[in-house]
Amino acid sequence: MPSTQQLIIWRKKAANRIHQLITSYTGEELQPTDSHADTLLRRLSNLPQRPSDRAPYKGSFPDVSISVGRVKTANRLKQLVINIKGDSLQLQDGWVDDALRSLLTLPPRGGNPPYADLIPATSLPSISSNQLLEMAIYADPNRVKRLYPHLLLAMAEYDITTPLRETHFLSQLIHESGSFNYVEEIDPGDYLEGRTDIGNTQRGDGRRYKGRGLIQITGRTNYEACGQDLGVDLINNPVLLKNDDLACLSAGWFWQKNDLNEYADADDVEMVTRIINGGLNGFAERQKYLAIAKEVLRA
Image (cartoon, rainbow, N blue to C red; front, side):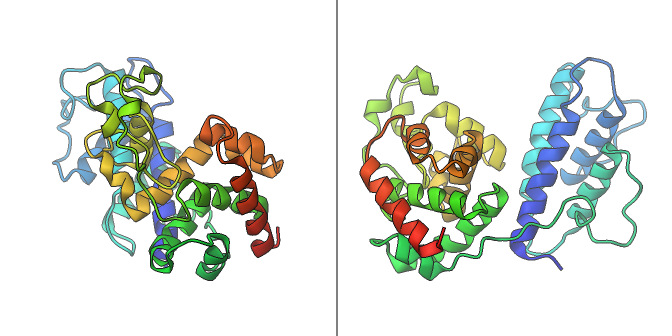
């Protein structure tokens, strides 16, 4: 039986793969994948089977073209798969595995559990909560205890699993969050009002989409992209980024989106800092935390 963390990673990876496979076609001509996608959407949405005389997507999105229905279905499936509930395998996991096999034209699953034959198992980083406290010297132990499992999950999911990647990631988070004590920018966010470069085009966007999460996701554009990839509506519920799980996962999402593993592999703390911060604010402190992290993890 897979661990809860492994199951979460499997669902996320399956959701991403399904989204990729469905949207790989862009034309208006129906493909075999469209039928598989429509069937899975109906099953996960507890809807009846598609009538034989109705084309895929028309039941869920009747007034759009095939290409638009395909994208809408792929986006909705991504959210539904990521948000399958339960700490153990569910009936829905079997549906997802079956659909993924159909999309990949693979033989039926047989007697093995869902996902196991399709997606390699992921190992969690071997970092203890005590080591986190050694790195984050001003951290609240109770808060670190809460964040700890979600941090490991985010690091595993986004391949932050080598000593250099781990030390760069954690040291930047420690600086950005004040030793894990803050998951929301202290400033009310008025200075972000009207920042169209980050998508703040509507009145109130500055406060609504100010920095949140352990790496301070900022701006309507980033909230929308992050929410879409994490399967959460952050546009209408931006404060969800303060939750322990999303505060960690959003940091991993930002790290991967900006290819920061590449710079961590090169031990380039300056470039990592510039991408996260937009400059070199607090650079000396970031270097200090990186040195501490390397000592603690023997990187």
